[in-house]
Image (cartoon, rainbow, N blue to C red; front, side, top):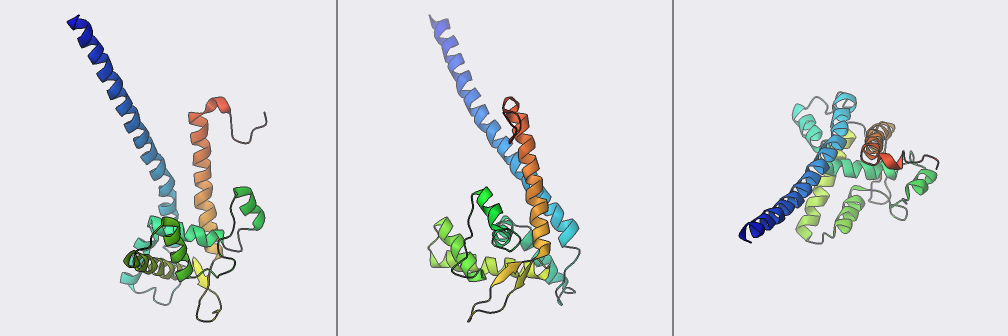
Length: 201
């Protein structure tokens, strides 16, 4: 009887360990997917963007280093993706197919409006955190402008709208396009029985 209880306890412990191992395995796989999706962005910055600063202060090595570091952040990737989504390079048909809409129609896309939208989406209301977010967006936009990814439009009152450039459009297409292919391959590896997304039945 004692041996049976010990065997049952060992089996239960094995099941618990197995569940924990599965959870850990999923976390590891998720981290691998995340890094595989981020690497192309950093690679494209190094090869296509960073070698060609366009600002008059491009000789300022300290400024260039700080701008590179800021653009290589997830916050910058998110902000630039929003700018791209709102740009003239993304038409209404593409947004419709993607199930998205423009976020800046009634108000122009500015540093302030984007930082406010990010805070609202994240539920951030603390004044200090809102101010920090605004400062971060300001640094991201300065860095993006330095490398020709965004441009300023004509002022509307005291607001200065910004827009994505052709260079930003190229960067976003290259980066998100590569990720779309990675997701496609991952789908085929993990769900081969369902075939390829978009295949006819």
